[in-house]
Image (cartoon, rainbow, N blue to C red; front, side):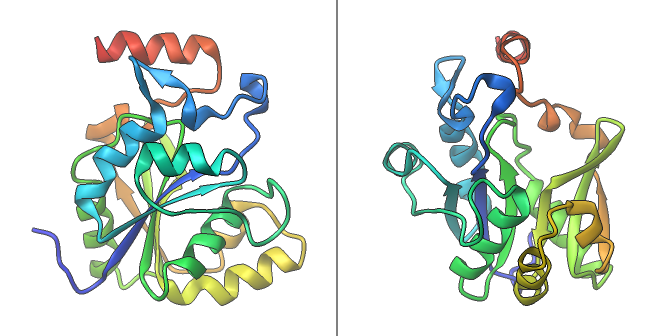
Length: 199
């Protein structure tokens, strides 16, 4: 059962440049005939109170596909996932933020529930998923009061996600039984592999 004392805004992080995919906007790529961002939105929307997309280009396409507001980074241009997290913390107006990268289309149905339960039971400031043999730092649940700390970190020119996480109380959330959630698309070969899985 999801504890409802933390309202959550779900965020699809689509603000990167996708250099390994030749600069294509990965969230808009079809996987099995459906754009990845649309797949994620459909899976995430039932789990959260509000939904946002963080994107620095193609805002109208994301708005149409995901049926929700699209916000760009408030700091820098293509400054990495932390910039997207800050932008969405500010836009979420006091709600916790649950992030999903736009290139991981196989989101677990209990993602929010497990992240929130871990955050609350550990009295942590953020929860980070673990699976596929390692930490998955872009799958995170952030308390709203982290916005000031994150803004100061980014304004100081820092970008490394693990360095900022190390400053806070982190709950690690085991998703070893949901490893497919972390299959992502960085190359055309990855796309072929995920489409084969979906079939």
